[in-house]
Length: 176
Image (cartoon, rainbow, N blue to C red; front, side, top):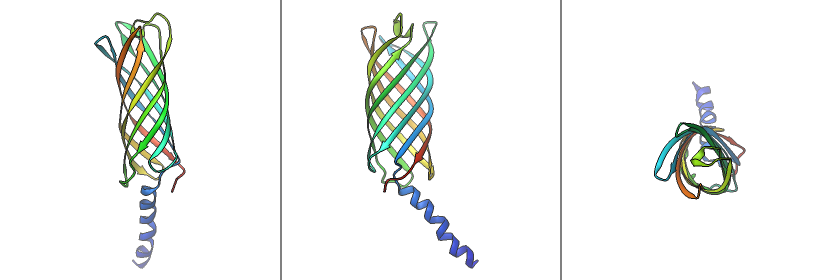
């Protein structure tokens, strides 16, 4: 019993320590759904979202985001990929739950038959959103949800798209 009382603080301390540290780098990977919008017509595309965030301090960093989505529009198989970079903001006052927000600019590639284009096109995009991560271990978190507004311009028209993602976040290093 006495050994247990001595070991108990040693077992509890690491849990409280990792809950309060800011990782140097966060790498996210998971499922993503893009609700694409073209001239009032909406269709869903499934895919993936991966991102890497370098934290400069406990609340500010930069995120590089890549996603790919695949689906069928008007009977044609289609896909699109997006690559964006921008600032990220996190609120790390809670021990386990970390809400975050980001605003990025980048480029989206639309494949043939995507939004009525005849060949692959690349267009600038704007990505604004955020989400909630929940730490489950010192080097692992679950991204419960990430919701992003993705604005693109294909076929001479503006598209207001919604991207929802969820998955796992690997946490590397620590900033004190």
